[in-house]
Image (cartoon, rainbow, N blue to C red; front, side, top):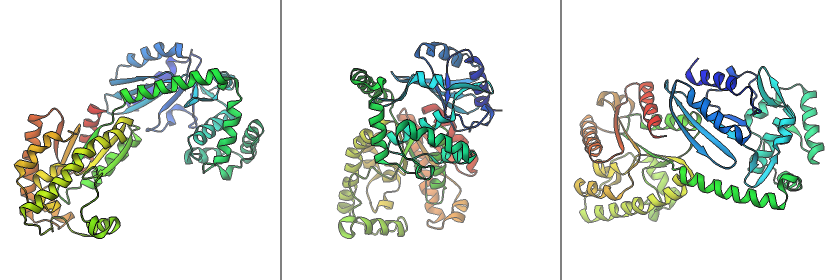
Length: 430
């Protein structure tokens, strides 16, 4: 049992005397809760101070981050053994300014199951369907499987209950997809409820806007870059890291290739966007024949402008809304491997201009011995691999001494060791 699992047991023992409801509890026992699941708990706001005290009293904590809003409080808990848990303490079930299930209704349908206070299957079904339809989503596969495994007569009871309450005609087979007509009908029903009457809705709107600004103020997503010569295992490690961020750390992730791409790839002016992308995918790296200093300068200036102006777009579009941005290659290629972009230009110049480019929080350079890389890909010579690797290592050391961000070379010989190393660094920045 890892420290996350120990904490979950401890947590529910400590809150046993509170009036709470453990939401979306489908596992039957807390021991079976998925290793990547959050804990969603509906509580009265007056209980928050007590919950904070029991969270901080757990001895195996590494760090705890807290995001307090009007409608909820989120705990982001890192344990000493590397495990992670997010707890969302909700004060009411509300989507934007619309309360979709009242606290009194949830409490009236809450009972204890093996010592855990949770709501009825009817409430669970309502909760999932209302939340996702209001968010323009279908019923998630996890819950389709859960309800689909119930005895048919029990499932029919739940569907009938919902249809009578909301004057709808849903069938279980239709739940997978979002239904705009159902959403409209549900909103009409909810708007007639006491908790959504005019004055209360205005207050909820104000609180929603306030929460939105709180998220913007506290939720700055990170930039993380991956560099490496072809064959160093960069794409595999990046994909594994993306999965780790999404599943374990519950982060929204966007992957960008090489640059912000506000400006199109240069060859798209000649071949069109799709044609240029196809040629780029099929063409081996470092095969450009450009030898002109003027042409190289113009090409670099074009891509530099993409980085210089595009970095603000990435910040406003993704980081401001708490996305973690993963770059598959970054500006460093222009310093060490300009040939890859068909550019022949003095690296001192491109290195100097890095001071005007956003400094990602974590920069990872993956490398391996030439003989290892050549077994994976034969796109570079052993000499080129050694030269590029040495260049990146020197650059990362120089930037580590110069800037506050992390510039981390990793010998990617064993994938799990590499991922463990990266996970440790993620704990430091998330």
